[in-house]
Length: 545
Ligand code: HEM
Image (cartoon, rainbow, N blue to C red; front, side):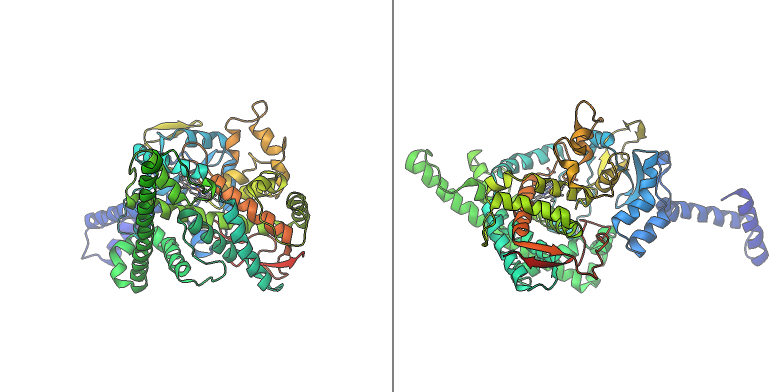
């Protein structure tokens, strides 16, 4: 506000309230208003001074497009953020922690991924202790842990479990339940977002801790309903962005209170399973030690054991309890949050892309048939089978470039003043890698809005970009749907194998297309908060045998 405007404002005040206010009072009132504006709305819509050298999105346009019009991520990106990347490797956008740096080039992403001491996980969620999110996930777990030594403890125990886990048989067996649902549709549209969500929920229940949610066939099964009610409430954007509603106003919100009770029910079930498994494994371990000094091994294939069993066995071989039951429970909950919806949407987007590109669908089908055979009955793809896929892997990778389910990951905060590819960032700056923009940045990818799996063919665009000879610095980071570096997704192989099994099985058994009136006909219509999702993605399947 300029001095002229302030003077004019004071004159007007004097005209309207000549006896009540002196000029001095009016001036004080005005200054107070300016300060109030700066502290509230101004703070909200303008980035802080120390970050103003970084281009930023227009707050009001962003607010209207994302919150009022609920435009898909891709539309917001094209309109507001891509233009900023013409001149910069990063930009500012408002997030839960306030104005946040969004990194969108491989060079800058590389620094972010590798310098974890400088770009450290923010202590963002665990400070709001009374939120549903916090209650569900708990403080001590591998995903949210910001203390490096604590995180290492979790990762050390969980890493070997994911390394051994290869439940390809389980993926296939549950895939046959998906076939049943598709067959029962008799050519009517099937909501694949829902179906893939139920598939990956059953997978993570069984592969995580040997629990059957029975969600594929019975979408309203008791435990699927409990879980889905919690999941929807935990990620509800209103409570996500306004966490004080949970902590201060829950007493007014009966439905919210019920969701808190459901979390107790779910946690009770998980704790019961963990304690029972610990007991059984302890007895087995003791017996083994007694029988033959631990020389025997059990007959069960490690790859098909659930993650909980593998984690607890690891503890025994390390000589005792490493994580408390509470910590193990928190990590199992994280596997749900991080592994269920993400893989479900990766699969749904692949099915959508193949429906929009019948030629690519056919080429992928030919590979599935070549590896799995074309006999007119269902088969169970094996680990050896899925290792042979080449084109199907390209489809999966391109889908995850085009529609990576995780669009930014969790926020980090700089732990010291630093310089990121020539841009000064003061200590405490909130920062994320914007995976969506990195994957759609025309300065990184050729014609990024074209869906083309052959980018990932040997010596294709992706290989060239990452090659030591011609590639740019950080080229390997250009494709980062699972992030990179130390805190890269621990479930990446698990998810890729799950996707290979499901896609190849579907390709071998069905041809599919979008209904004529599909809202997703020209492009997938997605949300703009949380895991990237295309709601109500109906697909019409036709059996091949
Ligand atoms: C398409 C599927 C998936 C995608 C796109 C994905 C993506 C990611 C990303 C981007 C991160 C890094 C988050 C951050 O640090 O900000 C991450 C971390 C993680 N993911 Fe995944 N994920 C997927 C599947 C899975 C699955 C299936 C599981 C487990 C069953 C899983 C478990 C985890 C865990 C535990 C972490 C934390 C790792 C750590 O901080 O050490 N994810 N994931």
